[in-house]
Length: 491
Image 1 (tube, helix red, strand yellow):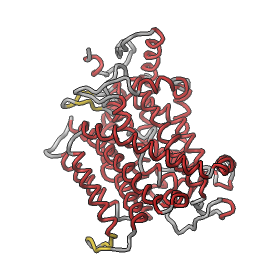
Image 2 (tube, rainbow, N blue to C red):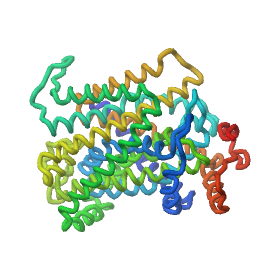
Image 3 (tube, one colour):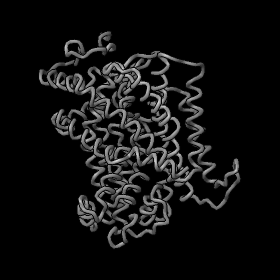
Image 4 (cartoon, rainbow, N blue to C red):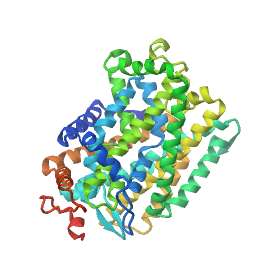
């Protein structure tokens, strides 16, 4: 099973996808005249500019839902894997993906807003919707929707729950075991799985509003607390910080750190973490109540910065500055790490041991708690994304109880994810991320050359901003954007 999954994973995450992610980010950065830099101040202003309505959620709530998907186990275990398999220089490529990916996030999230619909009293949108409406290829939209439901409903949840279980076991011990359906499972993992599934079920059966209200409280709290702890670790080892920066930068293009490995793992885990180009962000973006589609595109671009430049960097500096890591196939002298290679890199262990080296036993416990919130809120985002794509398919074909089936499948995946190996969990997750990225990135590139709707929206928004309008408006027909029916009907 592991070999089959790894083979498929290697095919999907070939160099072609690595360079497609980087190239697309650079292309859209140039096309938007580096909107991620020019409009940074506007991004901050827009965070609190819109309000929740009966049909939609606020920009901040949409950011929180989106961040709940971006800020997950990839920020803790994913960064560790990038360093373990790609070397310290993989961190640099995660930064590159974040900077360039912010422009990609603007494009896909603005498209999500332009082509959103109102479905049973709430806003829906995402790649399946804009592929059908803007590209006119319903078959392609269906493929994306089906792949996404499988990815976020069955493959990716196991990565999150696996990390929760591993972190809990490392923090609280796994000596006590039970036999469960032919598997020997630690009591700690079994308790973690049961707790997560129970809370998850309560929230996802409450709908998108309950998800939004939960994440808008938890996401800022958990991210801010985690960054504060990381800053404490960095300050404790502050004298070593210049050396760590040198370590990250010195091998970004050299065979020593593995040119392919550093770029490959940096991009792979960067995309997994910040999700720019993957097509997940547009689902939350489409749910927001805003005056103009470009506004939510800008807010979602900012979320990439929060995820990678803040949270991922916090993890990377903690691991590197305490030297609690190793690099596969490199000597300790080259890698600079102190750990032996028998510790799973595809797990939260690097981060937990980094904190333990400064804070003692509390370090492991803190990471386990942080990871619980990080991963749990990601599971909520996964459910919402899967539900949106089920809603898309339901427009054409439906069967009784489809959402109930989805919820049960996701909860089963979460439970099972805690008992399988970390390598298998991550490999399955990478397949899901890779397939979505291929389909979405090709889609948004085609849409650019077909009519540039997201670019036209940005130009329109900037023109209104320059004119000093009090309330922004969006008229798709005036801009030559077809099939944006929601905006034509809106007052």
